[in-house]
Length: 436
Image (cartoon, rainbow, N blue to C red; front, side, top):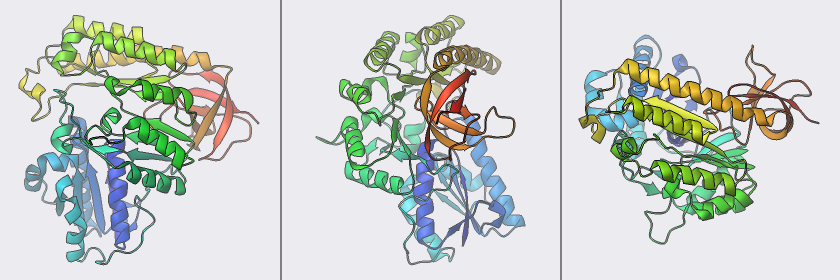
């Protein structure tokens, strides 16, 4: 049986897809990149915001057409959107043969085997996770599931459930498997890495896990993503300052810079605590890259409150910032509030904030001109890019940040580390030349 895969959403969903594909492979499936050549199409859906929901629905409809017009025999949909709207999707998209929420995932493979779509006996497969992307040297390790935060705008706890930490020994074994598969960079992901171990009495916490990973593997770069400010402890910061394989990089979402908005969003931080935490991080770990996320157009956000957010972002000078416009999500507390910021104004505010961050990023990248950096080479550049290869420095996370284009010299191979001298800074990217 040939399996085609459409994996949507965040990197945590990518981890889920890799684990599920490995189970398919363990039952005789052969993964194909060509959907029109697949006997079964697996779609891992996303339900985070409206645009992601639409993308997931479009993917299911595309797979349904391939089943009608081509060789596909069955369409399987899993993931966040299914977990939230399974009954509605069953009614509206009959082209999908199998809908499976998180609770029922263990039943999926046996059902497919019973229906003759998979071989019943499980055979050996390449590992606990089957890599199906383009950069095998960059992998993700999901250390926990679910979320205990009660942010007013977010439906993730409704889809993923309460926070559950994975056992430390299991995570170490998985990291060792990723290293054996060629991983040079492992990104630690969860809804909030700082909550790791809090659900287990006397259990290991995030610094304990990081120390175990550094001790038990030789992975060159470990990068922690998504840490709420409350989870940034002295013990963790000391690790950043002393462990060279733990890259000095943090993704610390703030969402806003106005205290009334933060309170209405049910965020745990306030403006002054964010300011103090950023100052402490930069003092304790010189050169640390801080990425954040902001939400504009939340119900009742005024022009003055948005301007306060813009001014705060300008003051903080975050290295990276992702932003999105608010859209109400069913079942969240914010959905009961009046969505009173017009969509056009939301988009205007979003573009204004992103334009500010573009200028901040361009200015901050100037300081690297003339310096030498260790970079991880990812892939060949596209035609028209200002270089032959796409690489990343430690302060550039995979997929969400800018990159470092390598131009001139003897090009190193993708998946390897190289030394490079920065020659030019763009808005979000660097241009560098390899150093012998």
